[in-house]
Length: 68
Image (cartoon, rainbow, N blue to C red; front, side):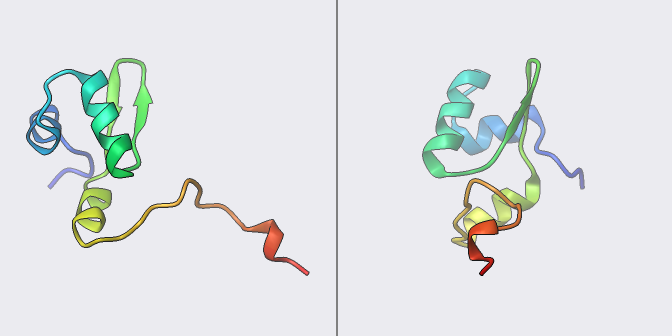
């Protein structure tokens, strides 16, 4: 199984063939993705987590605000 969704899988997930519409749909659902030129990259694990009800925050870095 590949780490990233194929274009067909993105089409099935979002219901859209165009990358712009797919990106809009992914944003509306809070699913993280990256673009690389004309490629739309979606991690398969993110889709599994989303289906399980996990919420995604914008970053994955250190919360410096939590340091006292």
